[in-house]
Image (tube, rainbow, N blue to C red; front, top):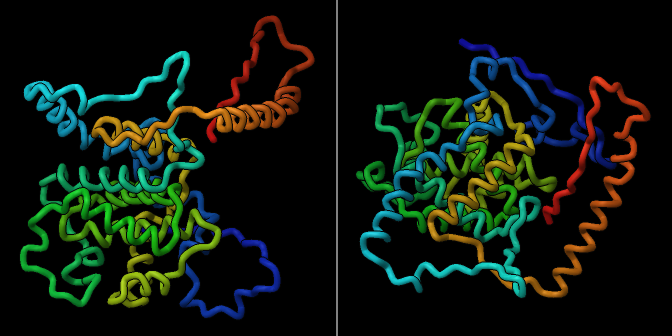
Length: 333
């Protein structure tokens, strides 16, 4: 049996609250594991090819969607769709079109749509090599409702709209952010890579639920507790939620760290997926008010990095290693 050692760091006290007054069984696992950045068990994985750990590795959902995207483009070309259906807005000298989604503040509705589309491609184009189905994610063994599970529950792939409604319901009820949706997708792909399993009709709901449960606790300061999800999903027990979270963490080898570079990669890959599937974010003309806001943000960025640039300059450099550092602040919100 593989032994996993954890490196836990003490958390600062918050006000007058004390962990001594809290029931240990009620403390969220992810809240206690926030400082974990490395576990010895993850050394067995090749991080260079794992998209959820390495910023240069291609995301799995984007790779799985390529075949369908090519087929859609081929169909549009063969059927000669009228240009009106493919009409896009382009910026000109007089009008600039922008959407309201940035890497630091993504649009919630369209981000959830993109994540649902990524999960849809995961299920549709899953590997058929007979990978194992873990019991904790099997909806027949751990149903999310008291209604009877159909005998063919594992035969029919869910539609994108069904996945979107499931994710949107959880995010709306728990008041989660768009950033949490991106982290959810990171954890989902990390689980599939680490545990060497596939997401399929029989387990997709519980895998998505576990990823959302964990992402909400890691990302949001005011995390949603497991008992709160039992209020959203009326027929599930808190013991089942606790066990789902525990096994999800073990399968991740307690690696809940999401580097900013990985987060940004998933955000832009989701935007690319949306554009390839005609799910582009809504564009609006740049108004004078928003232009002033962007200018103010640019000035703040300039002031913020001015002192940093000065400290980075050297008083003298060797002629053999003469380099000039150039800075180009990027506006992300």
